Amino acid sequence: MTKPHTIDNLILAALPREEFESLLPHLESVSLPVGEILYNSGDAVEYVYFPGTALISLVTHINDGLSIEVGIIGKDGMVGIPVLLGDDIAFEEALVQIAGSATRMRSNVLKEKLTQTHSPLLTLLLLYTRTLMKQVIQTAVCNRLHSEKERLSRWLLMSRDRVESNELPLTQHYVSDVLGLGRESVSNAALSLQAEGLISYSAGRISILNREKLEQVACECYRVVALNAERVATSI
Image (cartoon, rainbow, N blue to C red):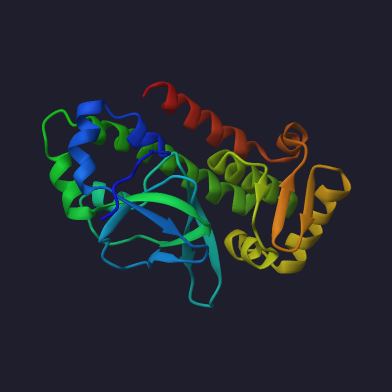
């Protein structure tokens, strides 16, 4: 087991020193490659993951083979919320969207730690769960009501906020899958944003050139989720 030397994850970083040191023997640093499935829907969750530079999509599938992203988790959160809620069975597929670092812990260890009286980790995870639930709800609204261009803008901004980089190594195929849109729809929306000078779009990479204007194009769903996450972060 490789002990983490530095912690990029905001939940782990916010723990009191004594609490973090008690977890340290159980934490393992891992490198997550793009496209890796941490678990499928219905799988038992053996590990929970605290992303650092990696970005994870929560993806749901329907019977006709289509899939759509319902949530996105970066350094702000933890992958494996069902364990916190008392069930080791995954709700959705957890897919690595952007390769990077993460810290993981066995689920049984997490559950043992959360039974301790006045657990700071439990408090932080409950606050994050509220943020993730709001994101999932707002994403459902967005997918139903807003245009392809608004949805793409919202999604790019959310991804950017979690990796803290304007350079996103993303393919058109992947973006179309997680947004539940056809490749032509994604391509048209991206080309429109590029023509306005908001992004640079090429094979395998999207660069955000003007974040402020991209926020203006995005639907209100981005601002609702960002404001909620900011409110929770200030309470940590």
